[in-house]
Length: 204
Image (cartoon, rainbow, N blue to C red):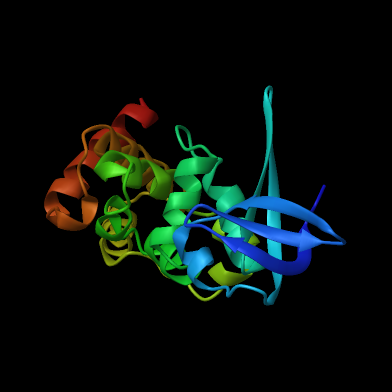
């Protein structure tokens, strides 16, 4: 696997760079943010991810290891492929994307072309808890959205164990994501009612 490329920038386009390495020009797919971060004729190091398809091999490049790691992580979300993942990293810095996922900031993610509200909610739901694997996520991995903290406290006070509370809240999040709803905009009472209903069905 090709993890990094060090070479000279020979051509700059909004969606790709030509990097000369040992006399060979390599075409690297990038986003506009990466293109804007390099200059013609300069030496550059790109952190790369090779995407293999039945009819193609595409090398994607990033200016930081964090961006490359997030690019690969985002593709684990159902419905998100490399092109959309690249677009996400072009619209949001690794720090901003990590913060948005950790704090469940749907509004920041849904602004990315091709994502939409449901896609942003699905991304947050599926990537919550996976940020500890990323160095850029260390600052934000302990941050919990205020609504979730309040809801957990309410459930525990009603006799739910922390494990049951987490299961009930995860079920609520799945239902909200399916309906395109943002939990941060809902009243605690409505969230609690939904969580209690899920908890009751799970307990039988």
